[in-house]
Image (cartoon, rainbow over all chains, first blue to last red; front, side, top):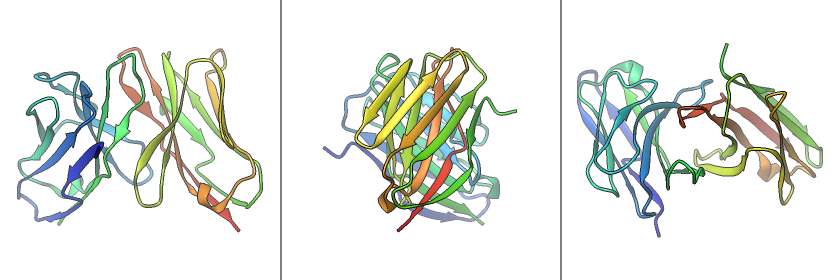
Length: 113
Length: 108
């Protein structure tokens, strides 16, 4: 089992370009999350999906959109990238609210010039 | 003030030393997590606590709900323990609130 996979691992964009970060899990988990991690700061929640067909904003949703394509896949889209979105992005999953352990993907390092 | 504070931010120690990392929080929680982020970036869950103490190998995690404080201890530390250790709490809205992490370096 692959667990949680993310693509791409690295990406460099110019300001104004768009891209989609992909996340897939084979753990049959209900909940999926997108976080960003910036130096010296804790993980910040961008969007989450408690179950297939639902998505909700987290702490820092501005500039992002998400799609929960099916139970396995949760994508994060930057429509018009800005230098402030330079960060490492992590996708995470867990089975449900009472099953608390989160499983993380390897991360995507994004640089916006 | 952040809702989850970790101390110290950075810690360098010699191999074999006993390590303590602290986490204080200011909100009501249903659970507290300790995670490890390797130098390569991967994040793995170490413990989930709602009370008392848990032990796994050389790692021990404790929580004091009344004092809103948790500690992560590493006994007989080893260079392979070098990583960032992250505390997170699950608040009343079920979302995780994350500490900024403690960077630990163990020198041989």
